[in-house]
Amino acid sequence: MAKPDKPTLVDGIKVEVTADAFDDFEITECIADLYDDDADDGAKMAAAVKMYRLVFGSDFHRIKCELRAKHDGKLTNDAMGQFMADVIEAVNAKN
Image (cartoon, rainbow, N blue to C red):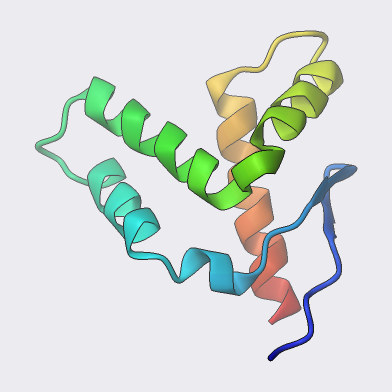
């Protein structure tokens, strides 16, 4: 059994995400839905939220609260999307 990764800090927020977390077919489906030119905006938003929940698991609520606090009490779609992109970059850098 592999040794668990240390938590990653992204924008000062601790995330317990490893590259293995992204090796999940449901996340692959979400990514496919996000890039599907035939999907409407609602379907793409639902896919994004599902992906955040799958990746962050039980830390999702805490991460949203910490991001909201960093952005003067409002968590925008852009802030959440940028955070996810930064998490992916940080996780890839560790591998």
